[in-house]
Length: 142
Image (tube, rainbow, N blue to C red; front, side, top):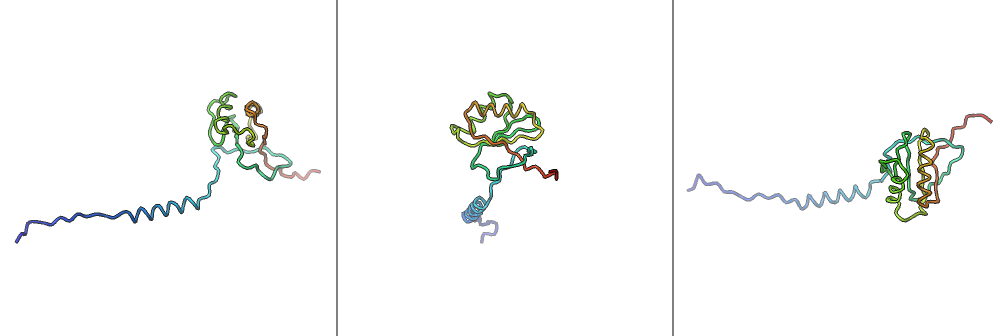
């Protein structure tokens, strides 16, 4: 009779079914998630009397903050000169110069920053430029 000897069993956890469940959940969440464009910078758009209701499909978005900082598709351009801005736009847009461009400048942005962005886009050959605005509130004057 062996009283002092204990039996050791190899204990193993089967995780294959757990991996299957996790991958199924991951696929479900990826397929049902809506992707919303979150801008890295809040921009208060200037007002205009008429606005275009239909936005172009797959536009290149250039944002300019009130402090004259440039963002190209939510990527900040660190150096605000024309050459660096052109390089950032060309990197994001690739070779497609027929792509529509939406310029989203804050209402308090200095005019020079807007002209700099338009100059960079013009030098690169972009021809379809829209400036984003919001509809002006009716003041009641006739």
